[in-house]
Length: 464
Image 1 (cartoon, one colour):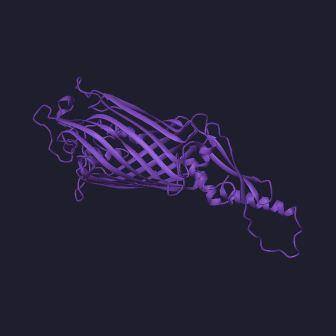
Image 2: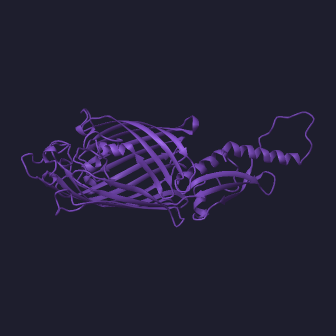
Image 3: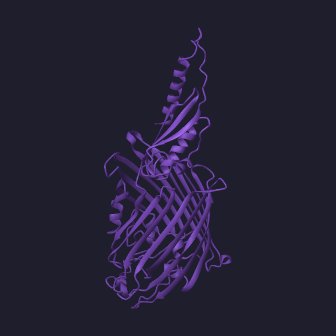
């Protein structure tokens, strides 16, 4: 039930109560707004989630005056958790005049979902794939657990080389109860082994068909991050963290006259050889007021992330990284949705390549060999990473259905993006981002085991 409907029901309750009282005066009087007290908050439809965990996310409590804004905020907050596919509210009469019962009616969803599903093929890596699982409400306690992996095996023409793989795991408590403060806590871990080609051209054309002879950077990463923060408001998170990684790198010259490129924008030139440490402080501000995670038609999301790496923290890299992302969602006639998005990013100092911006990660598709990375692993021949990023995008969503046994909801998305990346502030686009525009036509599906994206842009990226 919508908030105007709640108000209408409250007025109806008041009218019924007044009808049982004294007769109306001879002359009409201006209506007086009546304030109602929430006598009880009831939850209907909960089977896996503990009521105490739901109450922690409400913006009002029993004994308080009924506030339409607080009810709306509570409903949106509960939808954003990902625990429920539907949250409705209604009012019922209380035990006495002026008292009401606020009822939340839930349809729970499966909180163990597929968060990542990867399958691809490139020249340097004929087959690779991966899977990610996420539990958003572990044991009904509101705790989030996630894990993902990507595996490619030995690169092409290198049967004795180490396998390329990435493993990532995370634990997150979005509402840590401590001293009655709305605190947040999280921890994540990463283990990765990869290779970046270091050819003079992005296509690595001199080694096509025998990439095992190409120059490359072979590297590994192992580490994690601790995060601690607070919720300033019902839709906000302010986080601070510490990140520590051990990084190992080896440059391999390869065979042939081409040799190892000295381009300073290649991954091979942006990582120190040998064993090094990355030690950094992180800060994040996240504000999300969208009315739905799957197909939002109202609200905004603002995310600001800052990383400060320093030798003063015991690391070997002195750098800073800034990324701002903004999304604004709007409802169009016929239930259609319009999503506007933008991003600005900058990296300064001696940042390793994986802290810089890989253009294909932000475009729907890119002309040329670059393809979006999987868990930060690059399987393409293009290993150019940039220090500056600007993005503008728009996506039009057409709802197809809103109920179903397995495919709960589905919509068609038509999107376009403009992307500009550069190695330095005054430089033009690098070869990796020479095409500023990309588009996509995708079918988005909401199922009990996660959301899936059948993307024409992703298919194009594998062939262009």
